[in-house]
Amino acid sequence: MAALSVFIMVVPIFMLMSGVSSFVGRRKHLLSTLLSLEYIMLSVFWLMVLMISFLGGDGYFVLFFLTLAACEGALGLALLVSVVRTHGNDNFSSFMSLQC
Image 1 (cartoon, helix red, strand yellow):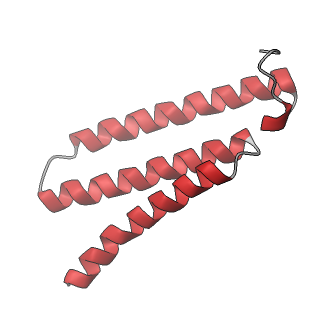
Image 2 (cartoon, rainbow, N blue to C red):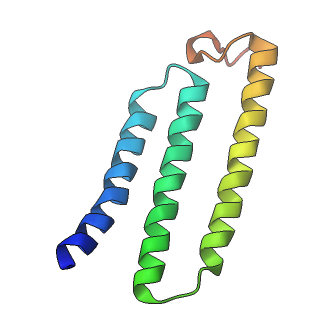
């Protein structure tokens, strides 16, 4: 039973590390960057749920975190739509700091 609890804790940590490596390594498109950021938020949410349930605490903070993650996702999509409307695509190589 202890090996199962260790495995359950290792999976979100592995998800977090793979999300961070994807966020840092793949910076070609804004959409892939936003998706990796959402993946990081999902793994942190899963890790927080496991830790709070393991410690026997309330889930109110987790719901607050989930609300902030949803707001972050909506803000990211609004930013993506704005960038696509002004620049025509979401490639980072087509952005110039002097255009904005």
